[in-house]
Image (cartoon, rainbow, N blue to C red; front, side, top):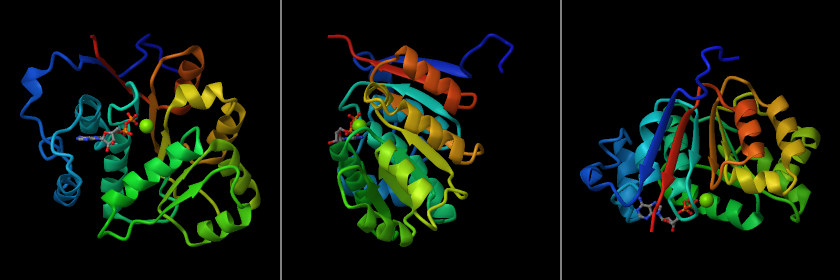
Amino acid sequence: EDKSGKEYLKEIQVDENEEKENETVTFESLGVCEELVEACNRLKYVKPTAIQRESLVYTLKQRDIIALAETGSGKTLAFALPVIQSLLDAPQPFYALVLSPTRELCMQIAEHFEALGVGISLKTTVIVGGLDPMAQAIALSKKPHIIIGTPGRILYHMQNTKGFNFKQLKFLVLDEADKLLNMDFEKDINQILDIIPKKRNTFLFSATMTNKVHKLQRASLKDPVKIEVSSKY
Ligand code: ADP
Ligand code: MG
């Protein structure tokens, strides 16, 4: 428990419409490695978005963050880059777990990782409800680096699939946390939090700050930096 009364290590608030002074910031200047800068350029990600710019300096240094930013602000790249950059140093199976609320969102996230991971043999697997659990167990036996899924089915495999363990897990990403919690995944997430290593990096992304998100933040993050990007129209 933090007795100083200070909830966050640091709080950053930015307004996307007032950021002329940040025009010279690049992925490179934020500390993204050459290999991934090249991947970004190949994918036409030339300039970091506000949430990427404000978070990467912390996430690349293994800090936990809670980031509040609206849909379309580029949150996927914000968590994919630090995860892959860390993995490049020491590739291991079951390195990162990304929890997202729907099948479609999980597929989109996997596409992002795969596009960035071209040329470095990055293996990702999507584990979502509604698909054949046996096929998923086989995919997991191939020991992917990155697992992206919905909480219910991820928990199912943690409890039922042999050889699927998270002892090596270095990163947990909670994507769209407000939606995850509105969809009644709270109990599954709490069980997952009990199973995975405490020593890890956690990134929590949400469009809004709700009571449930706050509770989840307290349960999952260590000395977080809070980053809030808003846009006024
Ligand atoms: P969010 O998760 O915040 O809703 P996404 O990560 O899905 O947003 O990104 C939204 C769109 O912006 C995607 O099409 C993505 O490819 C694009 N995008 C992300 N970062 C950048 C960037 N730095 N430059 C250009 N386009 C980007
Ligand atoms: Mg997203």
